[in-house]
Length: 451
Image (cartoon, rainbow, N blue to C red; front, side, top):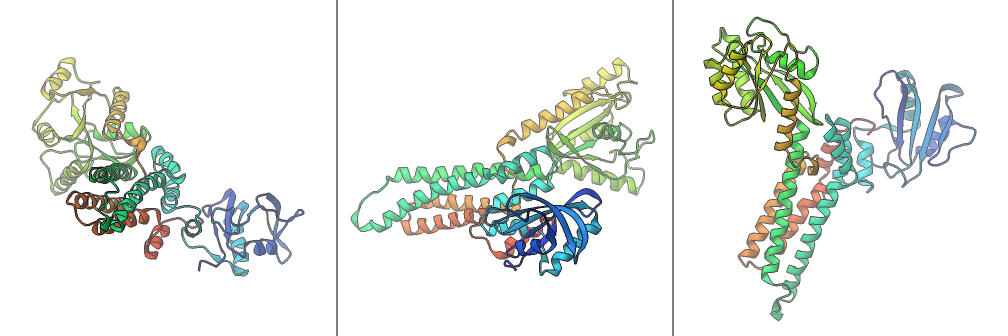
């Protein structure tokens, strides 16, 4: 399979001005010569204009760029065909290539070949996938850094410390009969502690990145008819949720994506919480409580006109330990005394708000942005990491803790060196130096075809 020449469209199969077809493998140049006709022939890394023909019949006028191995994305001979973006034309060109023995690529096969040919390591390959699927500016920026080796460099630095300490410990094995202390015990213990702390820090940054890439859950809650859905619509700048003066309009959770301060946010509008009128309302409220419990941030909406009641108190008690922003809504119809009464009862910082006029929206957005910044203060230094990387780092951290404990307990150097090799193997799996084939297949199968 690895020696086959492959092809695939790298753009969606929709009508568009331009589409791109990629070809990679040893038969690339021969195939291009067979179907492409240009006055100046084909030269590596030049954009060549010409036509693709099928037995003398024109298929399309195209531009082709040919990349000679190893100076290509995959490390193989490779070409990119830029044709008009009509799916019929794409299909014709793909069929022509298939007729020359070039098979359709599997999902992620171009990037998988780049990895297998040493053009990228596994952290860089996974970052490429994240760039394509990113839902926020932060994820794109962080993935670009990672594609250029930011995570790989950190892992290599930690790996360097481990190899240096391991070599000192193994030297102690070689000279065990000489009664020579090659490195003081305190120094060895300190170095082991340093490795443990570096891994702990990296794991924390990767966990933050994993959390941010899945999105920050923010839930809007309150009793019925306080304006929760109107708050959602204002933040989204569109009429996403039905707004009505009838209490209990929202029966289910409405979930929408939003960017705040470049971060991917999952904004949830929930059913109002009060005494349920029927079974469906009860089910909606149960879903609301579950979403409140699982969310990182809460927007609590209060009614300035009606004031506080038992339902408000119950919700506030439930979210007392949550990071929350409290909106006193409907200030456009409430009197000053009514607004002040709510503020005095709540005894917490509030934002005066009107879902009808938009007053307080700027303050709400600033409060959300500041809350996210304070919670994820290490945003700039975090990495886009999936569960595979997090699990391997957790394993590596446990290895490093065992190494530190073994040294502290004066265990034999042979046992310490063996545990350090396990630590090195965990890090090697992250970058792909030793990764089982089924893991590779799982990683690259998530990529889109053509990448």
